[in-house]
Structure formats: C-alpha cells, structure tokens
Length: 264
Image (cartoon, rainbow, N blue to C red):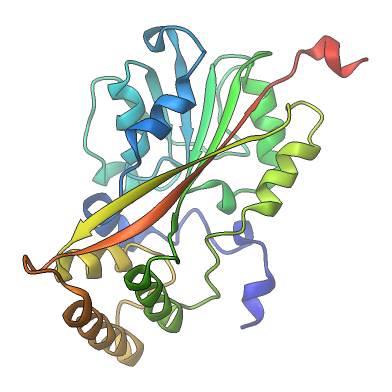
C-alpha cells in the first residue's frame, strides 16, 4: 500500500487507537521487571525521580515505573486511552504529545517511550525531550518485539501481517535509534534485550491482536482473521488451552549531555 512509505507520525497517531482502548488495557503485554529496573538504574533513589512516560496509552509501563517508587507523569493525548487506564497512586495522567509535552524546562529526570516512539516526529520529539530533561537526564525507548525464532510466535505474526492494513515491522528500530545517536544533545545509545512471554487463551489472543491499530474490526478481512487465529490456536495450544507468545523486549538508553559539552 502506498501509505506504508509514510512516516507513522503522519498516520493519525492521536486518534487511531480510540476504538482500541479497552482491548489495549486488557490484553497488551506487560514488560519484564528487569527492563523497568534498568530504566531507573544508577539514577539514585527511585522515590526522588520524576518520570514522564510519553505516549503512555493505558498506563501499562507507567504503573510498572510507579511500582518502583518513581513519580510518573503518564502523558497520553488520546482521551479514550486515558479513561481506560487503571489508577495508580504514583501515576498522574496528563494530556500532551511528545512534540509538545507542556512540561517545564528541566522538570523531569527520565523520559520513557514504551511501544510509542515510532509514532512520534523524531526531531521534534527529541528537541522537546532535551528541553524538559536536565543534563544527565535519561531517555529510554522500549519495545516488545515478537521473537520470530519461536515457531508459534512466527506463525502468529504471519496471520497478523496478512490481516494488517500496513506492513508490520516491529524489529527494525534503526531510524529511531539513529535519530537519538545523531542528536547533539544526547549520548551514545546503549542497548539491552530481555526475553519475555505472554500466555493467553484464544479470546485473549484475539483481544491482544485487536488492540493493534492495523487489525480490521469488521468486514470480511476481520472474519478471515478470526478463522485464521482459531486455526492457529488449535495447532499450538497447550493442554490448558493457552498459547504463549514470546517477545524480545528491546530497551535503548541515552542521557542528556551537559550543555557545556555541546560547546566543546
């Protein structure tokens, strides 16, 4: 499709999840605790940190960060996603975008983008992150990517790709990482990877699929998708009628460099 060549930030990122919010809240995978700990590592007592989770969706990552003790601003422009979020005492939801957060200069310690940075305009978003972070503040970009070395997950991904409204490539974050690497305000990117799994029944795996913006929710393509997913489940389900999707959680970390270093 011609739209496949367009940057994702041009494809209605603010509104395209409005009809997916409930499925997103119920069925999207979480993240490994080791990855959440790595985001906050070496920054001092988490209870002293302010984290802004940009493109927070229904707050999956925000609540995990809050559980570590950090104060979290879950920044999410889509009202339906905010309304579907479960509350957490250390998480406050706020409307805003990566490009215009509305936050004060140097007011946060960490910027996280969990399954979201690919929807942003990279130069504008990074300029905004640089503004709201002090020197030494951290940017963390994280994605759950399908582990295609796992046969059942590879078969699932093929069904999703057949049904999808655009080409799906969740494994090449080169453009995002290059944008950070090339920005003068940020240090070299460090990459960490973690294995993760999500065990689901057939209704849950269908809900997880429908939480993606590119899966049709009605019509012939939707019916064909449901038939294919039922066949996949019959082929791969364990004795307890569940299937485990496997992921590689890829985490990329960078720090805001000191302004004095910029002038050298």
